[in-house]
Length: 456
Image: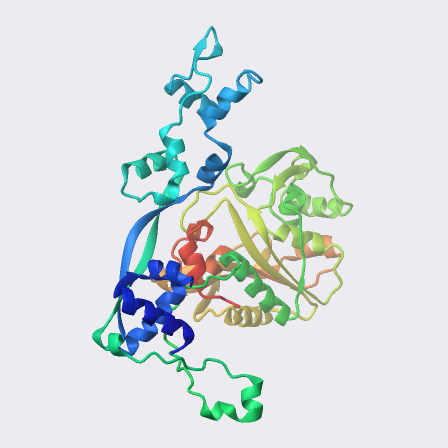
């Protein structure tokens, strides 16, 4: 036995049975260590160990503040003469309820200057002695100053074998002196049980979305891409016009896009984009083009990048976007989008398919399909679907295509193939974590956050 096991057995020979918390107080050893010692001794048949669960109480942050600073309604009585017009509404309601004050002619009038100790103050003073089932405890929870907590304890009882066991201390540590002098050969070492239960330890972790972002970022970097960032607020020019979206397209309506007050200046290349719109769509309204909005896709930044990028180039973005959408299990008004573009005069659709297969394979997607799609600014266009096991169906994960010449030529100044693909990051996280509703990613579920597997 190690020294702590010897101490525990000596105490148990005297008391026969006790809770781990009681043994912890008497031996000045942490309760979880007592539990581990008892578990080890139970495997030797020296003690019996049983688990007990009961409800306890703990103070909330508000309860801790009240215990430290005093009852809000009592503090109000002190502040009333100094600041009669700057009152805490909750404290005033409680003071009125206790008939410590009253309101006359629109003014708060003091009725009791120094009231006796209240029930709450007494309970907070003796909080360590309260149990959850006590009516006093329930009284504190109503004011949200305390909440229940589950307390786990262990009952440790010495066995008949333990009563007669010889208590001899064993060596638990090898010292340099033992090794140098060979004395370790004569020592009786304590054995260890690797499966001894210990309390869970939760280290700090990143949020699932942060982990997903980092995983996607690493995939792009491994493929030789450079990261870019763009502003959340942009103009209708970059978000729509530069991408060959006609000015009467339904996506521009307020039910799909969040517009802001004010206007933004048009860039120098706007005349070239204007000419394209006049040629193919029949008109171009500069006032419409200058409108400020929350970008609906990261492609708004990709369009701007094309005005100064030098081929060949590979660029990616992982950033937030905003759309006026109805929220459901796979849609949100605010969402992260992942986008990659490849600008290369020798690129073609076969290259795009190769990039997509490589990209999604690195993300760990077991099964994908690429089918024809439509986007205003790409031709050829494709949709990328993944098999989503929780829903037992295909889920659209992203779109892809080659930017149209009507997009590239006005921005880049030459007609060079630009491969592009984008996907919703929330859906990637759903796929990786087996979540059937992306809204769960934004809930503060500590159990899920602590126990989830890491992606990186």
